[in-house]
Length: 68
Image (cartoon, rainbow, N blue to C red; front, side, top):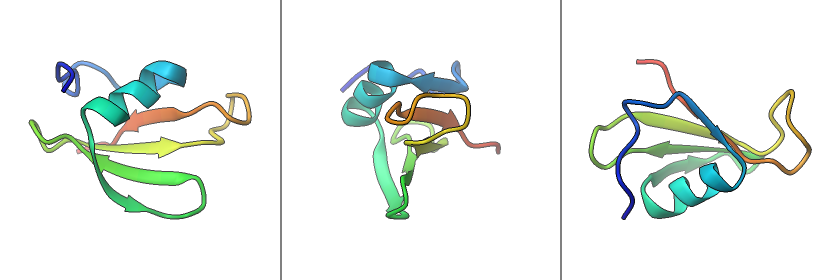
């Protein structure tokens, strides 16, 4: 389990985002189209992971905190 940074960060990408998903977040729903929704088990903050986010490379994982 990694240290919770959900209240401090708004966006992560690449290996940092992949590691944070793997070690800290719980999957809520997978759209099957490159978008996955997650929830923090500590704070309840939601996150959205995109594989083909605009402005990033084709295979870069981008994790964005959902607005409240």
